Image (tube, one colour):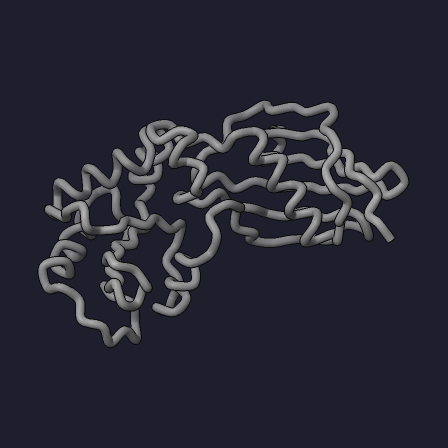
Length: 218
């Protein structure tokens, strides 16, 4: 499968390898993007893992998955592999998704509860950058990254601008892995310049805490 609308030439062997890859039990769908379209020196194989593939990803990491796929299709080191949670409908949308930062979760929905409160449904990307080092074989979202997600979401969704001062009442109760969908609840108390955050999975607490922010300059 290739991204719709591309006029760039794709190596026939690479295209055949991508089609062969779709028969792998760990692949739901796959497509190849030529170097010209991806603005890269390497072609990119984009894969949406199957349910079985996601289980392997969560247990063993991206490198293990890619190694198994490379063995099946004979793709060499000159290929860039990208994982997506789902495949957008158009080639342009796929490229946009690939070019998005992989530092933050995808926001799937939101609900504004009050002036200083919001709830966000977020999804952890399969290809989050932090997994390259934490950890390549057991991908886990560090607690400090979860705090950063909460602060970033509060700045963009609630308009907070004060600089970070300290953390209080921090709890990390459950490991966060690729593909997790979590509810992020944010509450800001302007009198105390305090941001409360809570990540949860259904009724299960994942992490929570309070972030103290400096009052923004007028």
